[in-house]
Image (cartoon, rainbow, N blue to C red; front, side):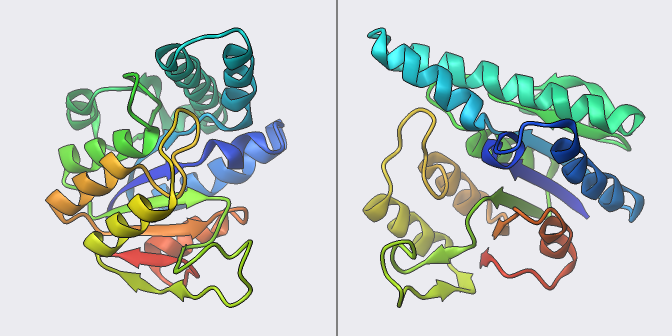
Length: 224
């Protein structure tokens, strides 16, 4: 299966350690050993948010905030590449054409590229370029709910959701700002809707949930 994983930076940087990075690369190597072709796009996480907060205090504009975030995604990507060793291509992939050209046996690791675009959007672009079977949006929250589960105990999780319904929820409930695109980037949502790319949104604080998202048994939300 061709799989693109949007790996939330919060997962990688909440415990910024070699041990935590290895928890995720072991899962990626396992998926690769089972015959899946992988592209992984890293988010910026708390590294990005920490620097972005300082930029705000210094009066920097939104373009500078985005540029800081992009660099943070590249640092996280390099950590992943280092941990994957020979299983990964040594380059950080930023452009869809490059991903398409090198999408073979090794795991490709990407990060941010242009200001104004999240890594979710980059993952959607890569998925479109390689005709991916699936996008896994790996975050630190589980699935899509009808309302904020942190505020409402009766929040209902959707097991399956249409592309149009996901777009509606994002427009209603989530702001789209540098470093914080909420549930999923709106531009990415429109792209997966256009190309009808099946997407699974999961809580991957347990890295093994990524395997379950690809092969079945996950506890997240399917968008199709």
